[in-house]
Image (cartoon, rainbow, N blue to C red; front, side):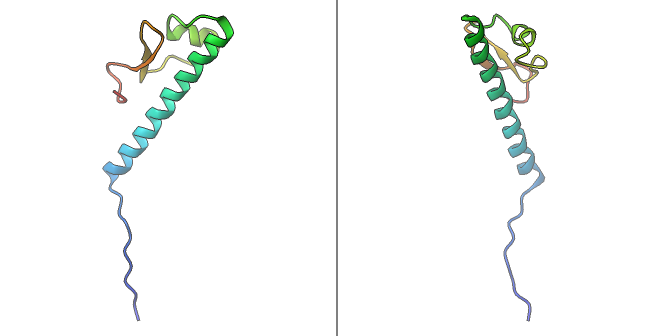
Length: 82
């Protein structure tokens, strides 16, 4: 006797979207933590991502996010996280 069961199917597009969203959230959080650490270390906000790299808070500048003039993490204009 065979039993019928329902198996949810996740499309490749749906899986890609979820993976992309998770990667973007992780990148943003990494940048935010680096900015907070920079503030804690120096007492001022970073002028650019290069400051975060120079202090070894990031390995390299992000291709997904930038810092605005106030030091807030914002999506880069050409990023997939926009």
